[in-house]
Image 1: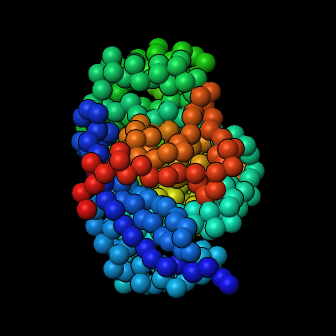
Image 2 (image 1 turned 90 degrees about the vertical axis):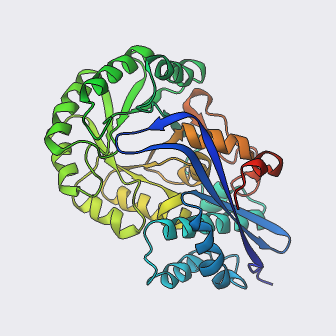
Amino acid sequence: MTPVVGGVETAVYTVPTDGPEADGTLAWNSTTLVLATVRSEGTTGLGYTYGAPATADVIASELAPLLVGHSAWDVPAAQETMSRAVRNMGRPGLVAGAISAVDLALWDLKARLLDLPLVRLLGAHRAEVPVYGSGGFTTYDDERQDRQLRHWASEQGIPRVKIKIGEDRGRGEGRDRHRVARARGSVGDGVELYVDANGAYTRKQAVRVARYLDDHGVTWFEEPVSSDDLAGLALVRAATAVDVTAGEYGYTLPYFGAMLAAGAVDCLQADATRCGGPTVWLRAAALAEARGLHVSAHCAPHAHAHMAAAVPNLRHVEWFHDHVRIENLFFDGTLDPEGGVIHPGRDGTPGHGLTLRNDRAGPYRVR
């Protein structure tokens, strides 16, 4: 008999940051993880997203009733059912996050029912998945930034690191330049240095800053202008030697198609916890491959590990400080980035390999 989904449950956890954090356009002091679990025949699949607590309401009230009784094998069909059902709610934003968490849980469930690592179910392209250390918040002083960068590069051997720039919506350009120079001094010439402006700069400002970045060997300039400004991204890309990247705010497949058609990026970023889970993330990767471009997985590294190993045009996965802290705290089965790579599925654990530790996650549960 075909196994069917017997139930869908949610939980919401809020974890304080380990210090004040900010990027070019936003500041925060906590991160919220919304967990979705799906059950079938005594087996549980786990998925999650990072976002507003109301995401759980969408899962419970709008998505769960559609999925109970649905085949556990047919995840793309479940994705389509969910996407059609939310048409009048507005799919982008937290609704897309809800679909993403459930989609990941369904893929995890299917792999566990088949007793396979998720990467084996999807079909592996590589055994090793490159990662880059990501953090370097604009709130960090020189010492804190230096300590974090050296931890990734020297202690863990990660040969790619990223800091935030664009402080105060681009008004702190002088300090941005100072921090880039300090970052290069921290990691030396043998480590790739990336920056993320989170859309803080104007077009011409981004071009000027990019010349400074090139002088310091920076090879990745993320969201130099707003990711909604496709023409601006394309302008900066054409005017600079540094790779221009964006895509983390893609909530639908057509968003990625438009970004690629505009020639806006050198590497497409996609976030499976926002765009629709593994089902849509893999399609976004295929769109990028058709354009001869790489794809990079944005944040939530353990959610992305297995699907990242399944595509030929992967550049890397973002080893984001906040999410790594939470995932290591909440889950058994997290991965070791030693040497700058992770090995999803290597130990043979079914699904994506994560198991919730209620004893550690419980104190942070808010609903």
